[in-house]
Image (cartoon, rainbow, N blue to C red; front, side, top):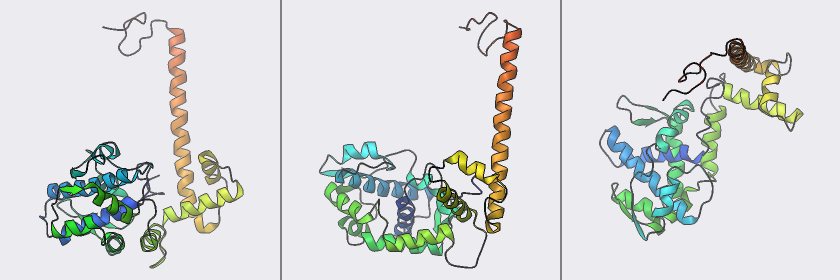
Length: 275
């Protein structure tokens, strides 16, 4: 699945964090901060808190905001101290997707390094936030900690958490679907094409319908055959695992029927739990 739909996971629902991750990286190195992973993560934690608190102050009710619970408490203050709001930062959560999409890679020290596309994305975000008061504050003092909450709300408005602007979308669409550059096999692009074809013919199609289509001969055009074969392999392996699981369950059930002394883990003969 990771090979056929790379760069997109169930824990990375917000495209805005990809651009924000690029922007954090850009700002850190432009501020000439130490080449230290720990220091970088502290900086990233403060910037993630700035966005989360700003969104909370604006009354943002959507999901996917890292540190939202603590951000709501901080947003009730006039001035807040910026520090990481969650143990697992968005920078880490979105790291694998960021790299898989070709926006950057980790250096030997673990710090992210932007690719050309990543730099374009960072610049697109910078163009949106540069006029905000908070952006000017960290340009003058990168390690600023105590910030007016109203300044963070203004900053969050500039970020456009739910609506990446035209320049950001252009970069993200390019890296996701390979719109420019030499033609290459891009399985996630093929997968989206397959999904569109299935839903065109079956508007109410679900995951099972897609997997069923992937093992149906001739269901997709030859141009998608390599990726369709990959999904057929995935489906076959998934069915085998399902069969093994239920087969084992049947064997265990039959053993219990034949031998009433069958013991569950943690139980003694007769089914009495161990204490």
